[in-house]
Length: 260
Length: 260
Image (tube, rainbow over all chains, first blue to last red; front, side, top):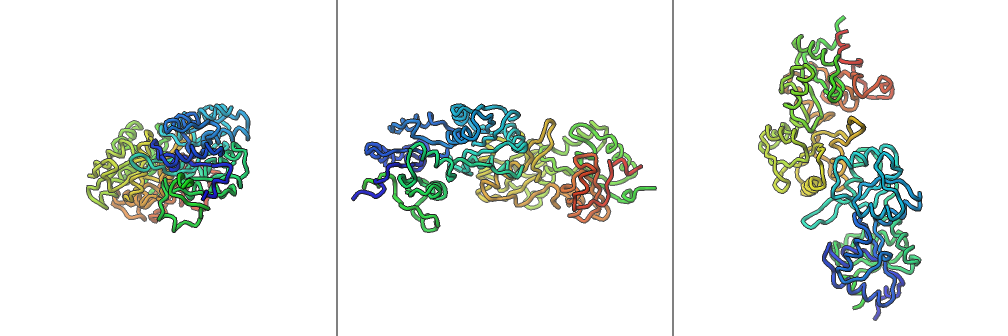
């Protein structure tokens, strides 16, 4: 019997916990994506990653044996550039973020400038964050610049333990200035999900949103009114399902079970 | 007519805004302290500074022509070490702070260790803060270590604009973990004020608490039940006084007006 989700035209897929764990591929997930593409399904990967560009993701996927085009990837970096570009074409932005974010902001036609000249404060995670960078973000925030955060993630699972996400900078600025971002782009925000729908050219009822985290992926799917599939190949375990009040439409151990 | 505060036996003095502005002395403040000492008054300087040791302050005062002993200075660095030492003698502590804080923690008999071995997380400002340091603080915070902050200050006036205070790290950790410090040592906390009273060997009614900030100095004075003197030689201006609901007992333009 064919899984009912295989009737959907489009698949909005989370990356980490669905097709890989950090740098290691999840074989069942990778194979399932290949089958979906062979069936002619439209695919878009959506990730809250705020430090890498789409180009970097194409290379990573290629390492998993997965051929993916840049226009099949919506990252928080790219979606942030796209969102700001629609709000104010060619805007002058200062960012706390890394190279990957800078790359996408510039590809989006924005001018990446120092904080004195910026109209926008773009907060993204940065593993080279320092006091000088935080001082600039603080001053721009106090000055009342439009404040956009790539994603809301507070903590990430690092290779040897938890590491700070973009939320570290959001929290620091909030405590110092009382300001939260005017716009958060990454999941579970509608902003990045609408970018994904636009890229697919599909309506919410034609797609399924797939991910490994209830509060991020399932919530994001429900926000746009799409059906949702939670996979247990990432951070959520079967025993976690009892406590949740936000129920996904489907739960599978991994994406490959679509074809069992 | 002699000013009524000159009947007090002890003076608990803020540093910045009372005897100096950053590295520049406030002449009236410096001269007034000399006169108070000549009169045999007991003096203690109390500062929320979380990056310097008392030794460093003695040197700074000396540059103003003011002879001050280490036991006339209570800094947030020293008071933090003293507080933890009373709670757990020889405790193993990890700190986000700078050299000055490390110096005082070690003088207080504490063992400054890496985060894996620490019983205490001591958060203090650090102009060399980076992602690795924040990762360590995050993990220790998540592990449930006793969490002490040197001071609550969110923003400081830097030489060319506002700069982040210890609150930057407190806010980042709060956003990531939901935890606030178990104990905050610096003003307006009672912890540092009781340290100052102990050093003077006086009761609250025998001292006056002097400072340039209502929410920090005046509040700290009221918390221990001492009379308070707000001086307008720092960040508070005369026109700010209308809006405040926490009234100091006395207001003077600068400390020198005690002798006018």
